[in-house]
Length: 388
Length: 133
Image (cartoon, rainbow over all chains, first blue to last red; front, side, top):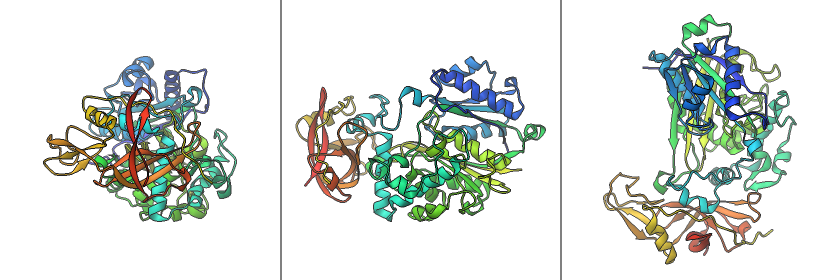
Protein backbone atom coordinates (compact mmCIF):
# COMPACT_ATOMS: atom_id res chain seq x y z
CA UNK A 1 0.00 0.00 0.00
CA UNK A 2 1.00 3.60 -0.44
CA UNK A 3 1.23 6.29 2.23
CA UNK A 4 0.11 8.94 -0.26
CA UNK A 5 -2.46 11.21 1.41
CA UNK A 6 -3.00 8.67 4.20
CA UNK A 7 -1.87 11.04 6.97
CA UNK A 8 -1.57 14.78 7.52
CA UNK A 9 0.72 16.98 9.56
CA UNK A 10 -1.64 18.89 11.83
CA UNK A 11 0.65 20.40 14.47
CA UNK A 12 4.14 21.90 14.54
CA UNK A 13 6.16 23.71 17.17
CA UNK A 14 9.76 24.90 17.36
CA UNK A 15 11.04 25.79 20.80
CA UNK A 16 12.20 29.42 20.86
CA UNK A 17 15.05 28.74 23.28
CA UNK A 18 18.58 28.43 22.00
CA UNK A 19 20.19 27.97 25.43
CA UNK A 20 18.31 26.29 28.25
CA UNK A 21 20.56 25.43 31.21
CA UNK A 22 17.55 25.97 33.49
CA UNK A 23 15.39 23.29 31.89
CA UNK A 24 15.57 19.49 31.85
CA UNK A 25 15.61 17.58 28.57
CA UNK A 26 12.32 15.85 29.51
CA UNK A 27 10.80 19.26 30.21
CA UNK A 28 11.88 20.55 26.79
CA UNK A 29 10.26 17.50 25.16
CA UNK A 30 7.02 18.19 27.03
CA UNK A 31 7.16 21.89 26.19
CA UNK A 32 7.45 21.24 22.46
CA UNK A 33 4.63 18.68 22.73
CA UNK A 34 2.54 21.32 24.51
CA UNK A 35 3.30 23.83 21.78
CA UNK A 36 2.46 21.46 18.92
CA UNK A 37 -0.84 20.47 20.56
CA UNK A 38 -1.79 24.14 20.89
CA UNK A 39 -0.84 24.70 17.25
CA UNK A 40 -3.03 21.78 16.18
CA UNK A 41 -5.91 22.59 18.49
CA UNK A 42 -5.74 19.18 20.13
CA UNK A 43 -5.52 17.86 23.70
CA UNK A 44 -2.80 15.53 24.96
CA UNK A 45 -5.58 13.00 25.58
CA UNK A 46 -6.17 12.93 21.81
CA UNK A 47 -2.69 11.47 21.25
CA UNK A 48 -2.56 7.71 20.73
CA UNK A 49 0.90 7.41 19.20
CA UNK A 50 4.30 8.77 20.22
CA UNK A 51 7.83 8.74 18.82
CA UNK A 52 11.18 10.02 20.00
CA UNK A 53 14.84 9.18 19.36
CA UNK A 54 18.04 8.96 21.37
CA UNK A 55 17.89 12.59 22.45
CA UNK A 56 15.08 11.62 24.84
CA UNK A 57 16.17 10.51 28.30
CA UNK A 58 15.99 6.98 29.62
CA UNK A 59 14.46 4.37 27.38
CA UNK A 60 12.92 7.07 25.19
CA UNK A 61 9.22 6.31 24.76
CA UNK A 62 9.02 4.55 28.13
CA UNK A 63 10.42 7.54 29.97
CA UNK A 64 8.63 10.22 27.99
CA UNK A 65 5.21 8.55 27.72
CA UNK A 66 5.22 8.06 31.48
CA UNK A 67 6.51 11.59 32.13
CA UNK A 68 3.84 13.20 29.94
CA UNK A 69 1.27 10.58 31.03
CA UNK A 70 0.25 9.77 27.46
CA UNK A 71 -1.92 6.76 26.56
CA UNK A 72 -0.66 5.33 23.28
CA UNK A 73 -1.02 2.28 21.05
CA UNK A 74 1.76 3.20 18.60
CA UNK A 75 5.30 3.93 19.76
CA UNK A 76 8.60 4.33 17.88
CA UNK A 77 12.16 4.95 19.03
CA UNK A 78 13.95 4.56 15.70
CA UNK A 79 17.31 6.31 16.00
CA UNK A 80 19.27 7.32 12.92
CA UNK A 81 20.60 10.49 14.53
CA UNK A 82 19.32 13.75 13.11
CA UNK A 83 17.16 12.10 10.46
CA UNK A 84 15.19 10.06 13.01
CA UNK A 85 12.20 12.39 13.11
CA UNK A 86 11.49 12.15 9.41
CA UNK A 87 11.48 8.38 9.80
CA UNK A 88 9.17 8.75 12.80
CA UNK A 89 6.79 10.68 10.53
CA UNK A 90 6.93 7.89 7.95
CA UNK A 91 6.26 5.25 10.60
CA UNK A 92 3.48 7.36 12.10
CA UNK A 93 1.84 7.60 8.68
CA UNK A 94 2.13 3.82 8.33
CA UNK A 95 0.45 3.36 11.71
CA UNK A 96 -2.32 5.81 10.81
CA UNK A 97 -2.83 4.24 7.38
CA UNK A 98 -3.21 0.77 8.90
CA UNK A 99 -5.51 1.87 11.71
CA UNK A 100 -2.93 1.44 14.47
CA UNK A 101 -3.09 5.10 15.50
CA UNK A 102 -5.16 8.21 14.87
CA UNK A 103 -2.97 11.03 16.17
CA UNK A 104 0.80 10.65 16.59
CA UNK A 105 3.16 13.03 18.39
CA UNK A 106 6.90 13.19 17.57
CA UNK A 107 9.26 15.17 19.81
CA UNK A 108 12.93 16.20 19.78
CA UNK A 109 14.80 18.18 22.41
CA UNK A 110 18.30 18.58 23.76
CA UNK A 111 20.82 20.85 25.41
CA UNK A 112 24.19 20.32 23.69
CA UNK A 113 25.03 24.01 24.04
CA UNK A 114 24.53 23.96 27.80
CA UNK A 115 26.29 20.62 28.10
CA UNK A 116 29.31 21.49 25.94
CA UNK A 117 28.68 18.82 23.31
CA UNK A 118 29.60 19.65 19.73
CA UNK A 119 30.89 18.24 16.49
CA UNK A 120 34.48 18.49 17.70
CA UNK A 121 34.06 15.83 20.41
CA UNK A 122 34.43 12.16 19.42
CA UNK A 123 31.24 10.14 19.62
CA UNK A 124 32.14 7.14 21.74
CA UNK A 125 29.37 4.57 21.69
CA UNK A 126 31.56 2.12 23.64
CA UNK A 127 33.55 -0.95 22.64
CA UNK A 128 30.42 -2.91 21.82
CA UNK A 129 29.91 -0.67 18.81
CA UNK A 130 32.01 -2.70 16.34
CA UNK A 131 33.40 0.35 14.54
CA UNK A 132 34.54 2.24 17.63
CA UNK A 133 37.92 0.52 18.18
CA UNK A 134 38.79 1.26 14.55
CA UNK A 135 37.82 4.93 14.61
CA UNK A 136 38.18 6.33 18.13
CA UNK A 137 42.02 6.20 18.17
CA UNK A 138 42.08 8.43 15.09
CA UNK A 139 40.07 11.14 16.85
CA UNK A 140 37.26 10.99 14.34
CA UNK A 141 34.75 13.72 15.15
CA UNK A 142 31.68 14.86 13.26
CA UNK A 143 33.52 17.87 11.84
CA UNK A 144 36.48 16.08 10.29
CA UNK A 145 34.42 13.21 8.96
CA UNK A 146 32.27 15.63 6.98
CA UNK A 147 35.48 17.38 5.94
CA UNK A 148 36.79 14.13 4.49
CA UNK A 149 33.66 13.74 2.37
CA UNK A 150 33.99 17.35 1.22
CA UNK A 151 37.64 16.84 0.30
CA UNK A 152 36.86 13.82 -1.84
CA UNK A 153 33.93 15.59 -3.48
CA UNK A 154 36.24 18.46 -4.43
CA UNK A 155 38.82 15.98 -5.76
CA UNK A 156 36.36 14.06 -7.93
CA UNK A 157 34.11 16.87 -9.12
CA UNK A 158 36.06 20.09 -8.79
CA UNK A 159 33.72 21.50 -6.14
CA UNK A 160 35.21 24.68 -4.68
CA UNK A 161 35.33 26.33 -1.26
CA UNK A 162 33.41 29.25 -2.75
CA UNK A 163 30.61 26.93 -3.88
CA UNK A 164 30.40 25.43 -0.38
CA UNK A 165 30.24 28.96 0.99
CA UNK A 166 27.18 29.80 -1.10
CA UNK A 167 25.15 27.36 1.01
CA UNK A 168 25.96 29.37 4.14
CA UNK A 169 25.37 32.65 2.35
CA UNK A 170 21.87 31.54 1.37
CA UNK A 171 21.09 30.35 4.91
CA UNK A 172 22.24 33.69 6.32
CA UNK A 173 20.02 35.62 3.92
CA UNK A 174 17.05 33.72 5.38
CA UNK A 175 18.18 33.86 9.01
CA UNK A 176 18.25 37.67 9.02
CA UNK A 177 14.44 37.56 9.11
CA UNK A 178 14.19 35.00 11.94
CA UNK A 179 14.24 36.71 15.35
CA UNK A 180 15.03 33.37 17.02
CA UNK A 181 18.04 32.55 14.81
CA UNK A 182 21.40 32.34 16.55
CA UNK A 183 23.25 33.92 13.62
CA UNK A 184 21.26 36.67 11.91
CA UNK A 185 24.07 38.52 10.18
CA UNK A 186 24.13 38.22 6.40
CA UNK A 187 27.50 36.83 5.31
CA UNK A 188 29.32 36.77 1.99
CA UNK A 189 31.29 34.07 0.22
CA UNK A 190 34.44 35.95 1.28
CA UNK A 191 33.31 35.91 4.92
CA UNK A 192 32.97 32.13 4.79
CA UNK A 193 36.23 31.31 3.05
CA UNK A 194 38.12 33.79 5.26
CA UNK A 195 36.71 32.36 8.50
CA UNK A 196 39.09 30.12 10.47
CA UNK A 197 39.90 26.77 8.90
CA UNK A 198 38.52 24.07 11.22
CA UNK A 199 39.28 20.90 9.30
CA UNK A 200 40.09 21.44 5.66
CA UNK A 201 38.22 22.18 3.51
CA UNK A 202 35.61 23.21 6.10
CA UNK A 203 35.85 26.67 7.64
CA UNK A 204 34.07 27.74 10.81
CA UNK A 205 31.22 29.23 8.76
CA UNK A 206 30.78 25.95 6.87
CA UNK A 207 29.61 24.42 10.16
CA UNK A 208 26.19 24.50 11.79
CA UNK A 209 25.52 26.12 15.13
CA UNK A 210 25.32 24.26 18.43
CA UNK A 211 22.04 25.04 20.18
CA UNK A 212 19.66 23.88 22.84
CA UNK A 213 15.98 23.58 22.09
CA UNK A 214 13.71 21.22 20.26
CA UNK A 215 10.61 20.76 18.19
CA UNK A 216 7.55 18.62 17.70
CA UNK A 217 5.18 17.54 14.95
CA UNK A 218 1.77 15.90 15.19
CA UNK A 219 0.25 13.69 12.49
CA UNK A 220 -3.39 12.70 12.18
CA UNK A 221 -5.84 10.88 9.94
CA UNK A 222 -7.05 13.08 7.06
CA UNK A 223 -10.61 13.25 8.46
CA UNK A 224 -9.25 14.60 11.73
CA UNK A 225 -6.99 17.06 9.90
CA UNK A 226 -9.97 18.43 7.98
CA UNK A 227 -11.83 19.04 11.25
CA UNK A 228 -9.06 21.29 12.59
CA UNK A 229 -8.44 24.96 11.86
CA UNK A 230 -5.10 24.80 10.05
CA UNK A 231 -4.43 24.26 6.34
CA UNK A 232 -4.41 20.51 5.65
CA UNK A 233 -0.89 19.29 4.88
CA UNK A 234 -0.80 15.84 3.28
CA UNK A 235 2.14 13.50 3.38
CA UNK A 236 2.61 12.40 -0.23
CA UNK A 237 5.66 10.19 -0.01
CA UNK A 238 8.42 9.05 2.30
CA UNK A 239 11.66 7.13 2.05
CA UNK A 240 14.48 6.06 4.32
CA UNK A 241 17.85 4.36 3.94
CA UNK A 242 21.10 3.75 5.76
CA UNK A 243 24.56 3.82 4.18
CA UNK A 244 27.72 2.48 5.78
CA UNK A 245 31.28 1.78 4.77
CA UNK A 246 30.41 -1.30 2.69
CA UNK A 247 32.99 -3.58 4.25
CA UNK A 248 35.79 -1.18 3.32
CA UNK A 249 34.80 -0.80 -0.35
CA UNK A 250 34.03 2.87 0.12
CA UNK A 251 32.63 5.75 -1.94
CA UNK A 252 32.25 8.89 0.13
CA UNK A 253 30.88 11.04 -2.68
CA UNK A 254 27.23 10.18 -2.12
CA UNK A 255 24.77 9.76 0.73
CA UNK A 256 21.85 7.45 1.45
CA UNK A 257 19.61 10.17 -0.01
CA UNK A 258 20.37 8.38 -3.28
CA UNK A 259 18.00 5.68 -2.02
CA UNK A 260 15.55 7.52 0.27
CA UNK A 261 14.88 10.25 -2.28
CA UNK A 262 13.71 8.14 -5.24
CA UNK A 263 11.55 6.09 -2.87
CA UNK A 264 9.77 9.21 -1.63
CA UNK A 265 9.43 10.75 -5.10
CA UNK A 266 8.00 7.52 -6.54
CA UNK A 267 5.40 7.28 -3.79
CA UNK A 268 4.46 10.94 -4.15
CA UNK A 269 4.31 10.73 -7.94
CA UNK A 270 6.29 13.94 -8.37
CA UNK A 271 9.81 14.85 -9.51
CA UNK A 272 12.48 17.15 -8.08
CA UNK A 273 11.53 19.78 -10.67
CA UNK A 274 8.05 19.97 -9.10
CA UNK A 275 9.35 20.89 -5.62
CA UNK A 276 8.76 24.55 -4.70
CA UNK A 277 10.58 24.55 -1.36
CA UNK A 278 13.15 22.17 0.15
CA UNK A 279 14.34 21.75 3.72
CA UNK A 280 17.77 20.14 3.32
CA UNK A 281 19.82 18.94 6.28
CA UNK A 282 22.66 21.39 6.75
CA UNK A 283 25.01 20.11 9.42
CA UNK A 284 27.75 21.43 7.14
CA UNK A 285 27.67 23.14 3.77
CA UNK A 286 28.93 19.99 2.01
CA UNK A 287 25.97 18.05 3.40
CA UNK A 288 23.57 20.22 1.42
CA UNK A 289 25.49 19.92 -1.85
CA UNK A 290 25.73 16.13 -1.68
CA UNK A 291 22.09 15.66 -0.70
CA UNK A 292 20.83 17.96 -3.49
CA UNK A 293 22.72 15.80 -5.97
CA UNK A 294 21.53 12.54 -4.42
CA UNK A 295 17.90 13.71 -4.32
CA UNK A 296 18.07 14.51 -8.03
CA UNK A 297 17.87 18.30 -7.95
CA UNK A 298 21.00 18.27 -10.14
CA UNK A 299 23.40 15.73 -11.61
CA UNK A 300 26.01 14.05 -9.42
CA UNK A 301 29.01 16.32 -9.09
CA UNK A 302 27.12 19.46 -10.10
CA UNK A 303 25.86 20.37 -6.63
CA UNK A 304 28.50 23.05 -6.26
CA UNK A 305 27.38 24.80 -9.44
CA UNK A 306 23.74 24.33 -8.43
CA UNK A 307 24.05 26.18 -5.12
CA UNK A 308 26.22 29.01 -6.43
CA UNK A 309 25.05 32.56 -7.11
CA UNK A 310 22.18 32.50 -4.66
CA UNK A 311 20.22 29.63 -6.22
CA UNK A 312 19.03 28.52 -2.76
CA UNK A 313 17.90 32.02 -1.66
CA UNK A 314 14.13 32.52 -1.47
CA UNK A 315 12.99 35.06 -4.04
CA UNK A 316 16.33 34.90 -5.84
CA UNK A 317 17.10 31.32 -6.83
CA UNK A 318 15.28 28.36 -8.28
CA UNK A 319 15.18 26.22 -5.13
CA UNK A 320 14.48 28.14 -1.89
CA UNK A 321 15.90 26.11 1.00
CA UNK A 322 15.93 26.30 4.81
CA UNK A 323 14.08 29.60 4.98
CA UNK A 324 14.31 29.62 8.79
CA UNK A 325 18.10 29.88 8.50
CA UNK A 326 18.55 26.15 8.99
CA UNK A 327 21.17 24.51 11.12
CA UNK A 328 23.82 26.79 9.67
CA UNK A 329 22.27 29.92 11.19
CA UNK A 330 19.05 29.25 13.12
CA UNK A 331 19.41 26.26 15.40
CA UNK A 332 20.44 22.61 15.59
CA UNK A 333 18.73 21.37 18.75
CA UNK A 334 20.26 18.24 20.31
CA UNK A 335 22.78 18.29 17.42
CA UNK A 336 19.91 16.77 15.42
CA UNK A 337 18.42 18.93 12.71
CA UNK A 338 15.73 16.74 11.16
CA UNK A 339 12.79 18.01 13.18
CA UNK A 340 13.29 21.66 12.27
CA UNK A 341 13.52 20.62 8.62
CA UNK A 342 9.98 19.22 8.79
CA UNK A 343 8.67 22.24 10.70
CA UNK A 344 9.88 24.86 8.22
CA UNK A 345 8.55 22.85 5.27
CA UNK A 346 5.11 22.78 6.93
CA UNK A 347 5.33 26.53 7.63
CA UNK A 348 6.00 27.12 3.94
CA UNK A 349 3.06 24.94 2.88
CA UNK A 350 0.76 26.72 5.34
CA UNK A 351 2.00 30.12 4.22
CA UNK A 352 3.29 30.78 7.74
CA UNK A 353 6.96 31.39 6.90
CA UNK A 354 8.32 34.90 7.36
CA UNK A 355 6.85 37.07 4.56
CA UNK A 356 10.33 37.93 3.30
CA UNK A 357 11.16 34.26 2.72
CA UNK A 358 7.71 32.80 2.07
CA UNK A 359 7.54 30.98 -1.28
CA UNK A 360 4.44 32.32 -3.08
CA UNK A 361 1.64 29.73 -3.25
CA UNK A 362 3.88 27.01 -1.93
CA UNK A 363 1.97 23.82 -2.60
CA UNK A 364 4.67 21.13 -2.73
CA UNK A 365 7.64 20.85 -0.37
CA UNK A 366 10.36 18.38 0.50
CA UNK A 367 12.10 17.81 3.82
CA UNK A 368 15.25 15.74 3.94
CA UNK A 369 17.42 14.63 6.82
CA UNK A 370 20.78 12.97 7.26
CA UNK A 371 21.75 11.58 10.65
CA UNK A 372 24.99 10.13 11.90
CA UNK A 373 28.10 10.80 9.87
CA UNK A 374 28.23 11.22 6.13
CA UNK A 375 31.65 9.55 5.71
CA UNK A 376 30.91 6.52 7.85
CA UNK A 377 27.43 5.45 8.97
CA UNK A 378 24.37 7.60 8.36
CA UNK A 379 20.65 7.37 7.91
CA UNK A 380 18.79 9.43 5.31
CA UNK A 381 15.09 10.15 5.21
CA UNK A 382 12.97 12.10 2.74
CA UNK A 383 9.43 13.42 3.11
CA UNK A 384 7.34 15.03 0.39
CA UNK A 385 4.32 17.03 1.49
CA UNK A 386 1.58 19.08 -0.19
CA UNK A 387 -0.96 21.63 0.86
CA UNK A 388 -4.36 20.05 0.19
CA UNK B 1 53.03 26.97 5.21
CA UNK B 2 54.04 23.78 6.89
CA UNK B 3 52.34 21.93 9.70
CA UNK B 4 54.83 19.39 10.98
CA UNK B 5 53.26 16.36 12.60
CA UNK B 6 53.44 16.24 16.39
CA UNK B 7 52.78 13.18 18.53
CA UNK B 8 49.53 13.32 20.48
CA UNK B 9 47.91 11.15 23.12
CA UNK B 10 46.06 8.39 21.28
CA UNK B 11 42.94 6.95 22.88
CA UNK B 12 43.44 3.21 23.28
CA UNK B 13 41.20 0.94 21.21
CA UNK B 14 39.36 -1.64 23.30
CA UNK B 15 40.19 -5.13 22.09
CA UNK B 16 37.26 -7.52 21.79
CA UNK B 17 37.14 -11.30 21.18
CA UNK B 18 36.40 -10.49 17.53
CA UNK B 19 39.31 -8.11 16.95
CA UNK B 20 41.97 -9.36 19.41
CA UNK B 21 44.19 -10.90 16.67
CA UNK B 22 44.27 -7.50 14.93
CA UNK B 23 45.78 -5.85 17.99
CA UNK B 24 48.06 -8.79 18.80
CA UNK B 25 49.47 -8.39 15.27
CA UNK B 26 49.73 -4.63 15.67
CA UNK B 27 51.99 -5.24 18.67
CA UNK B 28 54.25 -7.26 16.32
CA UNK B 29 54.17 -4.50 13.71
CA UNK B 30 51.80 -6.28 11.35
CA UNK B 31 48.57 -4.95 9.84
CA UNK B 32 45.95 -7.69 9.66
CA UNK B 33 42.81 -7.58 7.55
CA UNK B 34 40.21 -10.23 6.88
CA UNK B 35 39.64 -12.24 3.71
CA UNK B 36 36.66 -14.42 2.93
CA UNK B 37 37.33 -18.01 1.95
CA UNK B 38 33.95 -18.23 0.20
CA UNK B 39 33.96 -15.10 -2.00
CA UNK B 40 37.65 -14.22 -1.84
CA UNK B 41 36.99 -10.58 -0.95
CA UNK B 42 38.94 -8.66 1.66
CA UNK B 43 37.07 -6.54 4.18
CA UNK B 44 37.72 -3.93 6.87
CA UNK B 45 37.18 -3.47 9.76
CA UNK B 46 37.52 -7.17 10.56
CA UNK B 47 34.40 -9.19 11.30
CA UNK B 48 33.58 -12.84 11.98
CA UNK B 49 31.01 -12.89 9.16
CA UNK B 50 31.98 -11.62 5.69
CA UNK B 51 30.14 -8.33 4.98
CA UNK B 52 30.26 -9.02 1.23
CA UNK B 53 28.68 -12.51 1.06
CA UNK B 54 27.80 -13.28 4.71
CA UNK B 55 29.91 -16.45 4.81
CA UNK B 56 31.28 -17.38 8.24
CA UNK B 57 34.47 -18.70 6.63
CA UNK B 58 36.81 -15.74 7.04
CA UNK B 59 40.54 -15.72 7.69
CA UNK B 60 43.13 -13.22 8.88
CA UNK B 61 45.74 -12.18 6.36
CA UNK B 62 48.74 -9.90 6.75
CA UNK B 63 48.28 -6.82 4.59
CA UNK B 64 51.22 -5.45 2.63
CA UNK B 65 50.87 -2.27 4.64
CA UNK B 66 50.95 0.05 1.66
CA UNK B 67 48.23 2.09 0.02
CA UNK B 68 47.11 5.48 -1.20
CA UNK B 69 45.25 8.34 0.46
CA UNK B 70 41.54 8.22 -0.52
CA UNK B 71 40.74 11.40 1.41
CA UNK B 72 42.45 13.43 4.14
CA UNK B 73 41.60 16.41 6.33
CA UNK B 74 43.86 18.31 8.72
CA UNK B 75 41.89 19.17 11.87
CA UNK B 76 43.27 22.33 13.46
CA UNK B 77 40.85 23.37 16.16
CA UNK B 78 39.83 20.04 17.64
CA UNK B 79 42.91 19.12 19.69
CA UNK B 80 45.81 21.27 20.90
CA UNK B 81 47.88 19.89 18.02
CA UNK B 82 46.80 19.62 14.40
CA UNK B 83 46.31 16.09 13.13
CA UNK B 84 45.45 14.52 9.79
CA UNK B 85 42.53 12.12 9.62
CA UNK B 86 42.22 10.07 6.45
CA UNK B 87 40.89 7.06 4.68
CA UNK B 88 43.68 5.03 3.09
CA UNK B 89 42.94 2.47 0.38
CA UNK B 90 45.24 -0.51 0.91
CA UNK B 91 46.87 -2.42 -1.93
CA UNK B 92 44.41 -5.22 -1.12
CA UNK B 93 41.55 -2.90 -2.11
CA UNK B 94 39.92 -2.11 1.23
CA UNK B 95 39.91 1.36 2.74
CA UNK B 96 40.45 2.12 6.41
CA UNK B 97 40.14 5.18 8.60
CA UNK B 98 43.51 6.27 9.95
CA UNK B 99 45.79 9.20 10.70
CA UNK B 100 48.68 10.33 8.50
CA UNK B 101 51.77 10.96 10.63
CA UNK B 102 55.49 11.80 10.63
CA UNK B 103 55.31 14.37 7.82
CA UNK B 104 54.27 17.88 6.84
CA UNK B 105 50.49 17.64 7.15
CA UNK B 106 49.99 20.56 4.75
CA UNK B 107 51.71 18.63 1.96
CA UNK B 108 49.30 15.70 2.02
CA UNK B 109 47.14 15.00 -1.01
CA UNK B 110 44.59 12.50 -2.25
CA UNK B 111 46.27 9.76 -4.26
CA UNK B 112 49.54 10.00 -2.37
CA UNK B 113 51.34 6.69 -1.63
CA UNK B 114 51.66 5.81 2.05
CA UNK B 115 52.92 2.94 4.22
CA UNK B 116 51.81 1.75 7.62
CA UNK B 117 53.54 2.71 10.87
CA UNK B 118 52.38 1.86 14.36
CA UNK B 119 51.88 4.47 17.05
CA UNK B 120 51.51 3.70 20.75
CA UNK B 121 48.13 4.31 22.34
CA UNK B 122 47.57 5.40 25.91
CA UNK B 123 47.54 2.15 27.90
CA UNK B 124 46.49 -0.03 24.98
CA UNK B 125 47.84 -1.75 21.87
CA UNK B 126 49.61 0.22 19.15
CA UNK B 127 47.38 1.46 16.34
CA UNK B 128 48.12 1.47 12.61
CA UNK B 129 48.69 4.86 11.06
CA UNK B 130 50.30 5.82 7.76
CA UNK B 131 53.13 8.00 6.54
CA UNK B 132 54.05 9.12 3.02
CA UNK B 133 56.39 6.73 1.20
